[in-house]
Image (cartoon, rainbow, N blue to C red; front, top):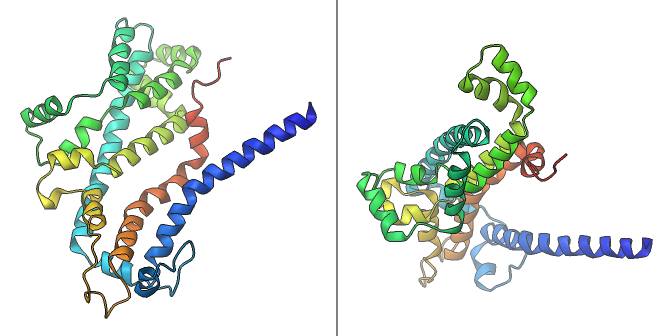
Length: 284
């Protein structure tokens, strides 16, 4: 029994290591290509370790006005969208978690249906157009304000809030709004951090909505600009002979610039993340 248990653990750990490497190695290769000079990249010498390290690609990318402009749009959409989503999701999750709210089961059924059936493209576009959101940053925020999966996680946390805590607040004269913001939410740091990370990643990586609804270049988010760099895949002879970068290194540098900011957020939320995603997994 002990031997089988150890063998099982070894298999699980080995499988996790393989999965981790399959996700980490492509990122390592992208970083290596982005900081390697033009010649070894063109000769396919760069695998997972950089060759002739140079930061010229990053200097070129960071000198692009479009990158900074799109970065500003993406930061605004991510910050404001995440805050708005947390507020709206918290309000809705608290309502459907209260037993005294009679239509809560019906509301949750409609919410869960959105996880199964996605909105068709043409009605979705016509709805956004009828609301006069086309070519505005609100077209990147409002359609993503409430995510059904995040709502379910937050509702599960609110349902586990001790009734004694709610009752003590009501005895002190708290209404529902004060109960939520003064008593329930301060105890919900793990789930708030987890949901905030989910929303922030969604807003930061927004691409499909931007492709459909934004046609003004000044309002395009970072992912659209990244696509324009990545699609420039044909090398032009003689263009990069006097510099240490080419299309490939510029593409990789752009990807890192677009990815790194959201990666830096995770360490600050890591201590809450595990507790947040386990909400509702264990019932006592």
